[in-house]
Length: 304
Length: 327
Image (tube, rainbow over all chains, first blue to last red):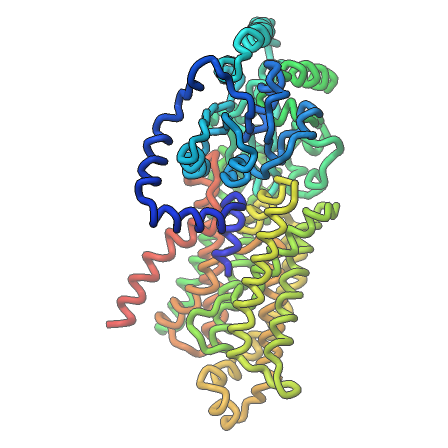
């Protein structure tokens, strides 16, 4: 029973268990189908819709990809999204297929897409193979950092027949990003703790785009030296690194800041919080520079 | 010095050493003498805060929780006469998980909402299992206790899975990380709360040690030998539940200690509960306080879950003990 609780904690919900089992049974009967799925799965890296016919029915299995599709003008072709895709607001009118990591291939196939854009997570591999076996092209696009957005947008543009529009908005983003990166950095940027969770404390490391957003906004991630996107540390480590500011992705002072162990951290004790709430900080998107602008203003408002 | 006496000395030294290590090492660069000076109030604010407000209560809390889990495991193994019994056996971990997840899903505020809800969930699960196991008025059937604990725990775990799948808040998954156990929430305040709930059950269990010796022979023999079996079973069950719920509230669910430490003491030391319970408390406390220090330092600045360290360090030692005992 304890191990069950741990399993529930450690793994994302698997909504497609029953369906997966049914497919497994079918696969036993049809080994050729499995072989086909494996071969097709191996060829999904760069699917080119045959001929000039661009993808007209797209299912997007990541919030950042949904945003990119709308940004390049292909939003009207998106027929399915995940439960997390909430931007732009027009996306909310599109039917949801549930989770995008560990997605349900049946729910996706039911929308009869001719392109499925998904994040290359390990738990998506089997389901992507099943889509391929059904003849549904998939494209796997990694959007972990700001630098991965332009190639992803251009790929989507090519696949949806919006290559020119994609190129134009991508170039706008790239030039904004370049000028943000070229902007003068403060001589002594404030050290910023980006906390993902309080108990156990999980901090955002240098491997996350949020670290880059903080740097572009004139701060320095207190745990920017860690290569991981996020990492568990102890309160003691945070207290010893003594960040100047605590970044809270919330709109109010969270409850954990009142716990005595956290009051050892000077920035918590002195209530040096910066609040940044919004999906433009929660995932890498073309709106990232809006998040940077808000964050810069918020960081500058904290007395040094 | 007699053999029995030297064993107590070794355990006492191990306990003090584990506490000292807990205070003197950590991921922050404050070690040895500097840490001791900070403990006495000398040094800069950050250093003093780290040693006095973080390390000291954390080491003591880990010690108290480890000791309590070991004692609970020992008495539950005697109560249900099953070597696999551990403190979370009786539906406690499932109930605690459900409480913690519901607290977050319902948006309960307050710095102590999650731990308090976990403790309440644990106690409710325990009460349900107790109700299932009480037959014919006031007789506690320990076989039903065992199976009831397993099914109530599984039921709660299933509800946790449902809440996780259906609720839109991805924070819920992080909430379950808390349940995996650790001392990141340690403070003097948490230590005080834990002590307030732990002292009485520990005293009750120690007082019951003679009767537990009889009970581990079987309920019938215990009755013939003059033990008041039914009240004893109820008291032990209740005290063990409150003790474990208090541990869950301050540290989540930490496996291994409550299962293995009692067996290690029995193998090394014999079965008399009058020495088994205090020895298990000292060894469990030393193991968990030491393991927590290792968990914080081994891959600093990253920290490991303490349950990983107790198992990685403890399993090989226990395996050697088992071989020695079997031959």
